Length: 96
Length: 400
Image 1 (spheres, rainbow over the protein chains, first blue to last red):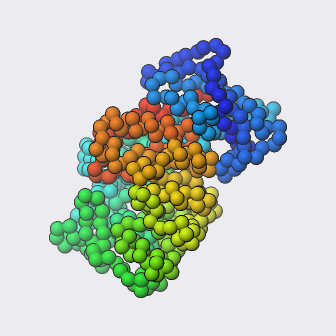
Image 2 (cartoon, helix red, strand yellow):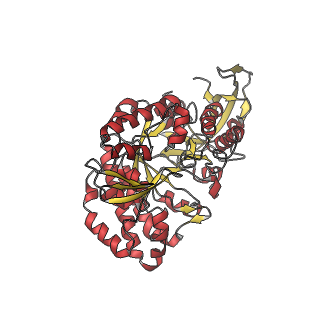
Image 3 (cartoon, chains in turn red, purple):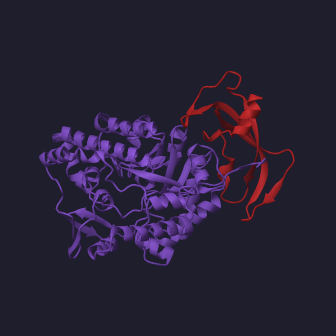
């Protein structure tokens, strides 16, 4: 099952970590809070999930780019309905 | 991440390493500046001249394929390209260019070497028909048109309805499939579906009111042709198709919603169903403003939308917010301003704005809002590709 969630909020990781990539872009570690809202079927989002998963919050540790031009990394569902499809590993954690 | 994997991740609405790049076609004058040599690829006039001199189509095809590999893969590093080099098949000569393309797609016999003769000026003869070459748009149009009256169209369809049951249309190129199939996502052209170019605007549009059954027959015939193209090409390994619609002008669709639902919707649904039966995906290409039709187009079953023309009022951010849970988007750097008349800086700003609007969460492939026509400044197009790489990197999971 491919789970889909919306980004509820983005906050800096407890311990600030920053790095520079090979193109000179600065990346910082953040926590993305994702609320599960459905699953993908035939590449379309179906807003149905087992009761124990619907609405569950999944925390995702990510590197976001803080260089100019990367404001789009920080959009959350308070401004736009940005959906995230969770990868297999994250889905496995939930099943476990 | 390989380009092919990157593209599939985006199409599956996952976040790849960076926003994938696609382009339908690049005009030879622009390609020449990028490659540093004259391309055969999509160089309609040069191909006509070569054919008229007796150069075998196979030889021309070999040169065009080399151009495609050099231009799209080695120079521009695109992720998604057509598996068929433009400018090689008669479809390119008389299909896309002529208007009334879907009928011609299915009807022109491409099993033989085309007989090409230069008649002087911009006039050419291919097999039994005469054409005019339009240098400003790199296109050929039938001159005079193949058919002009409802009766002629009906007769044409009756006479050619069996011909679309066999693979006569210029399909995927085996060398491109072999050399790039594992690396890039190669897509196929399904064909034209009731679009409006020169011929259709003058004929089909008024016939919607005077001869609606003839319009229905044209659209149904073109849909059957698309379905057959999907069948033939999917057997060669193509997994994604573009259907060429062109249903909008700058301020709205050419047809009313009522006409669309009656004639076009069932045809589009039949093409989408045919693609899905082959486990393939279908992208709808349309120029112009088709906002009024979008809900119906998506309900018909398309998987992706191209090219989302900003100059015609197609707002990729609104479309992403409203339909991004159901389709992926391919677009939409405006070919009417920044790429054509703007500066490099303005082009880069347009790329940043497009990524900001459409890339979050995946489901976006960046390209121009149509194709790279002869008026596009080569330096702007190169800047578009480079800045997409510069500003299109996705968030990375901290475990990766």
